[in-house]
Image 1 (spheres, rainbow, N blue to C red):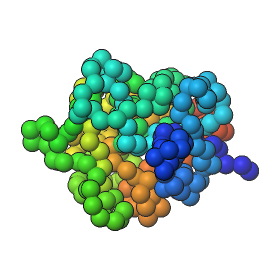
Image 2: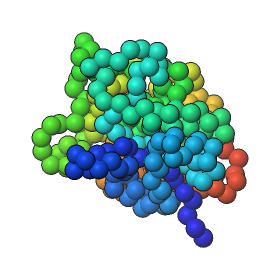
Image 3: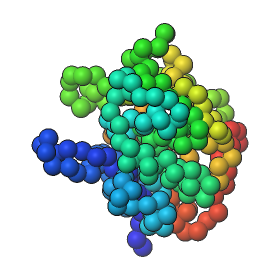
Image 4: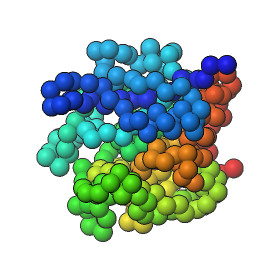
Length: 259
């Protein structure tokens, strides 16, 4: 039996400072293929090449990946500043309507880092351009130096809502995660439930209240060592189960705060 297809949202990348490509991190494909047990398919997130309706038909679920460019602040009614960093308007044009369509249809997606932020913006929320500049907040950015192991090392606790969706999934109300992001949620989008926070109050885990499908998203990077990490593994396994259910035609059930 063929595996269900997970569309992995790609990022624009300039190879050798010259050659334009669409790229996807190998660890994303590894987590989808070997933990979710689905077929990873890299999506060129650009409306010149694909449209949302096609993607919804071709793919059973979607992985909204992290990426260096940020969601353009015009997407949530603000003006761009230097603090907002780089942008990828082509990806915005695909992922934001894709999220809304998946929420409506019950088609599963898993949001990671930028993907987490895309979900909030797609649902009408806004973002802070730089978390570390806010009073009382820690620096959540990737360490500038060190090996990949050091950059993706576990760095802070995430406190989960007691009895909530993530608590039930992980079997714990407190988990350790990495952190490699600059931006974060400012105002919460419609029906977005914040189900986990960093110690400084930064939202780290969300889902869409009463959505008819899998809508879990996290601000950290669970794709790192997903097969072995005790937090990443159940997250990608649950995502794979939801994708298989969608592919088999099973009716999704709404995600709720408590059992």
